[in-house]
Image 1: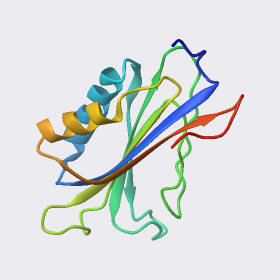
Image 2 (image 1 turned 45 degrees about the vertical axis):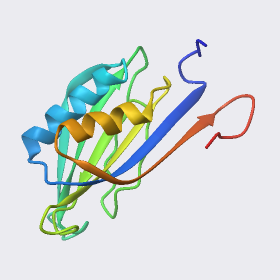
Image 3 (image 1 turned 90 degrees about the vertical axis):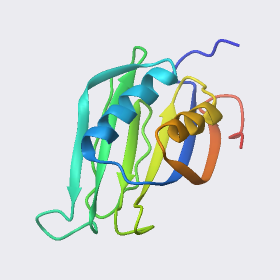
Length: 147
């Protein structure tokens, strides 16, 4: 089934056990973009916390923009990590959680459907264990979100 890009948004989230260095996180995100048959746009964005104002806990958010054709917008929120935008894959890393191995949240949001199990399998090849996950399909036209 071919879906016109932008009419629906597939979102899959993963809570990951395992430590990722910044360089590894950037590579991981670019590879996941390719895995879901999209194209990375530019370099990954990194935001470290806490901010100079002391907001946001201790950790970092690494995000990779991607596209099939649409323009992309990204805005980092200072108080908490709470955005899901099509064309952005954020990895929210909080080393203080799940000590001693570290922990991260990965959210993949794409207007092209993908197999969330393939992303989990890929993470396992990198020595990362998914401890919880969830996925849904959001639609602008013609119906309710699908779990």
